[in-house]
Structures are given as structure tokens and as C-alpha cells.
Picture (cartoon, rainbow, N blue to C red):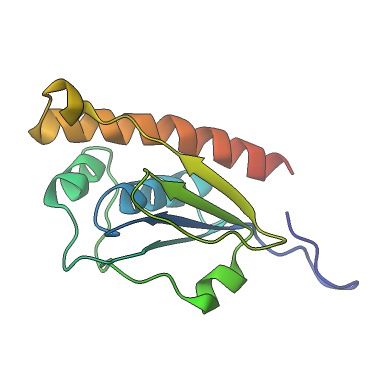
Length: 145
């Protein structure tokens, strides 16, 4: 948890998930962490080259777990959001983001089932579940600090 000046309560941990289009993997990670954190963390997602829409299969795979991303849309990485977070997680190898001092960076090279010929909803579930394991670890780490 990030410390605030004396006399104030500690600030909630804040996490930014980044992928290139902000339509799939970063939205999956953000939705999963929001559910796990239950309001105890601030969660953002953005893309280095935002697309037009969310990946419908990503949205459906979250819905299978009772998670809605209603109102979400692809957004660019902004200076404001970077300044607001403690942790930046870049998902996949397409998105490139300059590291900043004082912000924890992680690169998650997620599984890519399409390389094995697995497509459609089966692919998306595998990607979601890979990200879910990583999100659980990150949540546990941030919740205990």
C-alpha cells in the first residue's frame, strides 16, 4: 500500500493494465482484478494503440465468471493515469511502454493458444485463465503489502 502524508489514511493500491489495443488482454486483467479486489484497489486499463471496440470473446469470457465490463471501451495510455498508479502491467509483447522511476513494472508474456491452433472461445478461456492466475498473485502481493 502506498503511504500518504502523516495524518491521512493509506492510499489504495492502483494498477494499470496495458496491451496494444486495450480490447482484450488488458480488459480481461482489469475486470478480473476489479472483481478480486472488491473496491480495495483502483484498477485501470489502457492501450498503446487503442482499437475501436472490446473483443466480444473477451467480454463473453468474463461474463462466464459473472464479471461485466459494461461501459468500458479502448482507451489510450495517458500521463494522468500513469501518475495515478503504483503498478503498471504490460500484457503481451506488442505494447511498449517506457518505465518510470517509482512505479513498479511487470511484463506478462501471456500464453497464446492460437500458436497451437486453438481459436475462438476455447482460446479466449485459456488466455483468461492464464491472466487470472497472474492477477490472483498480483492481488495477493498488493493486498499483503
